Length: 213
Picture (cartoon, rainbow, N blue to C red):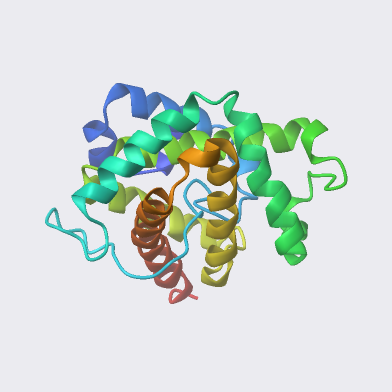
């Protein structure tokens, strides 16, 4: 089984466009690093909550306007500099806000995060997957399948639903730092709505897997 097939089903893999598929393939091949993530992993950046119905129709709290704002602000975020440097504030903030998660990052010297090569690779992978989520925001059925599966897998890495709020808060911090004055209240609300939907999907995967114990 390929590394990519660990991220989604064969049918889902076929549906994803080649650009997204290549990103997920490369990221999933870094499983040793990603396996230590506490988020969306790939996606565990969420605040958790409502959403993830699997429906193609309107989702509670996540509007078309929110989707447009998320896509536009993410495109602007990417223009601000190196993706790893832009993402690093998320993890620095995370270790400050939730020091109890540090054991999940045994490969990190949290006293010198910016110089830690493994952490920098991890940060890059996380933010590339955030990009995949944004790229797929107009197909929530596809995206929900991917994120539910990620939640199921990351239950075995130690991820729990209670981790999601603080990770979401720290991602918001990184976006705010990167976008500066462009990170308006409307932009923040759009991202929070998106995270809330994603978090519902991720939590669904975690819960489903936990019930198998």
